[in-house]
Amino acid sequence: MASTVTQMEAPLKQKHPRGLYVLFFAEMWERFSYYGMRAILLLFLIDNIRGGMGLNEAEGAAIYGLYTASVYLLSLPGGWMADNILGQKKAIWYGGIVIMLGHIVLAIPAGSAIFYLGLALVALGTGLLKPNISSIVGELYPEGGARRDAAFSIFYMGINLGSFLGITVVGYLGQKIDWHMGFGAAAVGMFLGLIVFRYGSNKYLQGKGEPPVRAPQDTTAVATGSTNERIIGYGIIALMVAFLSILQITGAIDLTTAQGLAQGAGIIIVSVSFFYFIYILVAGGLTPEEKKRVGVLIVFFLAAALFWSGFEQAGSSLQIFAERHTERSIGGWVIPSSWFQNFNPFFILVFAPVLASLWVGLAHRNINPSTPVKFAIGLILLGLGFGVMVLAANNAVTGELVSPLFLTFTYLLHTLGELCLSPVGLSTYTKLAPKRYVSQLMGIWFVAASLGNLIAGLFAGNFDEENVQQMPALFNQVFLFAAGFGILLLLFYKPIKKWMGGIQ
Image 1 (spheres, rainbow, N blue to C red):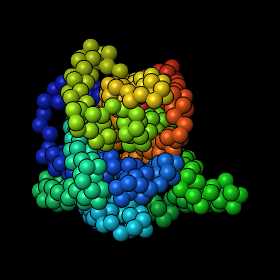
Image 2 (image 1 turned 45 degrees about the vertical axis):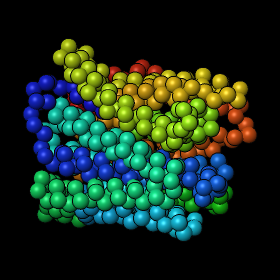
Image 3 (image 1 turned 30 degrees about the vertical axis):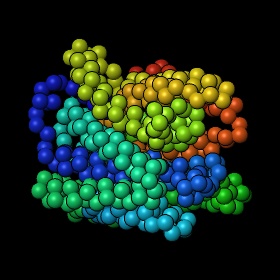
Image 4 (image 1 turned 180 degrees about the horizontal axis):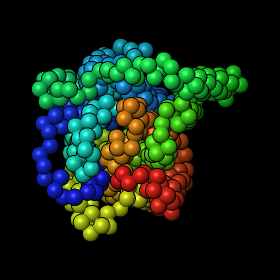
């Protein structure tokens, strides 16, 4: 979170603009709605006792993965709409309204078609809101440097405070009282976020996130000077469409089942990301220096996608492990399994200031780790967390409920890894992205989360209650991939740092 504070201490002592706190509370309530609903989503999908959907693990996890992936994947067109049409503030406002309507629809117990409509509305709204609220945070600090990093640390605490409150309130209402009451509570959270943003932005965000205004010279350049780039761009788009069409025709993508749709979505997400980076490098009109920085963003995109594919097991495989294999009784009361997801935001609120002080202290000694090193540390910590889960799974296969300390320590390691990677990524993407592509590339950052969420959902589909013997091997796979990629980043951090062009 505060892991990106790398400059001098003096800038950190300056007061932050009040607009930051408007964005803090707006994001806090939006994350209340998202993480609260996410905490009970998979449980609702596989529940066949209390009025849930009654799906099997594979189908439920695939739908969970599709939804959480769509939420972040739609950040890319959401960023484009803000950059080219609406501006960031209008995108946030309209996105919040659509999110609230989606949660209201989810609160209606009216069958699967209505439920999926609600999920679609929440995903569409989040795609508009999520990348653009982060972009305005960066816009408040045009000077960049340590104050921007510190601002993203504060903003990140808002995200996790909302997550903690959402999981606690929505998780309890959904699991202990009624699923749809939990979904309705998420709508209330988004409504509060809209109120905060509406009144706060009018006063404290004037001139920020406004609709784009093209200068006359830009119009002339588009009309006369960029014909070749546009032709190349159209060619790349046509190539992507042809590629996806071939996959569909040949049956490589099976869209007839939830699992097939999820697997097909994974191919689509990877394809869209690949072709977008090709487009921006070839036809984006970038300078050589900007192309190098985009190259760095590609590396960070891959690292982030791998990180989120493990981290987002919190709502899928780790949620199933908490529900079925973890001792949750205290006296005569059973803790809702969704509450285990609260370890993450709790640990963030506790350890963020600690890491903030650590990075500043290391910076004074000129030994503060560079951004690629922090990404590597985050991945290695993620891997170690799954190493703990290998031990827990080995105990669970004996049929005994395991100590909650296993999940507690796993979430601690994952949280420390997140503090090294996620806020660093938010800040770094706003700093390295060419100005005219900042919201789109912020959207790409969330597309990495989209891919990770999708993989997390598909992974959880392997947690068949009738074959628990496979759990240790599944967790071990994540341990090896995450730790291995982290070590690879450590080996190549110097050339990556050089391509950043002095931006830390």
